[in-house]
Amino acid sequence: MVGVQKKSKFKKVDRGGRFGRFKSRQSRRMVSTKVPGGRTVVHFKEKQPSKAKCGGCGKVLAGVARARPHKMRKMAKTKKRPTRPYGGNLCSPCMRKKILAGVRNV
Ligand SMILES: [Zn+2]
Image (cartoon, rainbow, N blue to C red; front, side, top):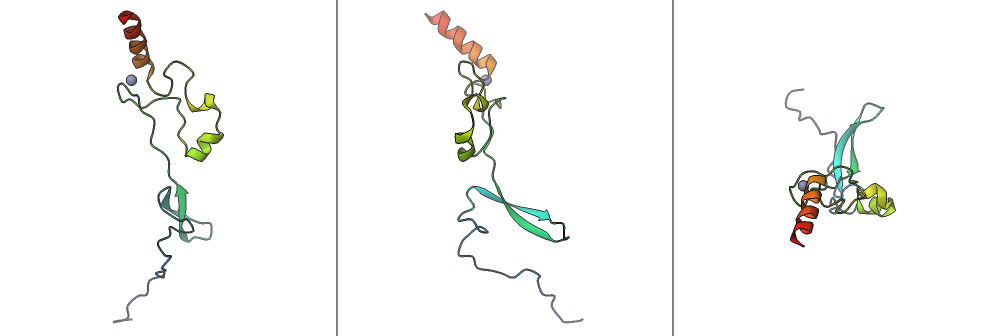
């Protein structure tokens, strides 16, 4: 087999700028997955949004849901953020500072 170029298993297919069967890659990412048959195929998975951060110190907020907008819309309000003043915007130490600062200024 000298001089014979090995053919690629994968054909180049023009999908007209599409991302798999999806219109755009904006909300999807490519993941190589091994299927039960032994092949490795590409799956198009939904991207995850970035974690919510505190508006005061920039720390990652705990108890704040991380999902795409269509899932967030279905989620209960209590599942999306902690139920306290500034919940989902500030971490608890920053909230405490803010409330104390507000009281002291009055
Ligand atoms: Zn903070």
